[in-house]
Length: 78
Image (cartoon, rainbow, N blue to C red; front, top):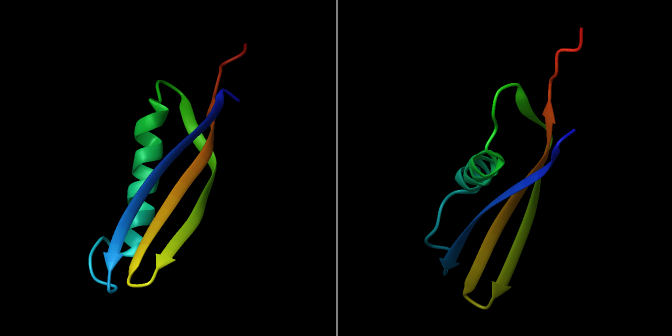
């Protein structure tokens, strides 16, 4: 195990209009996580989890997804 990595994506909505779909937000959070990982060689990300957070104030709402995972590296021990 090398460490952990996170990525996030958020969108704002006014009267329920605007931003991305929830599916797109999830995909963008995962893509941001992989970008932040800077994987090399035989490294991989496992145990990926998504956290959802929503804030609502009258007609304005904001949704954020945070993806996190564990970076591991495969080594060849002979």
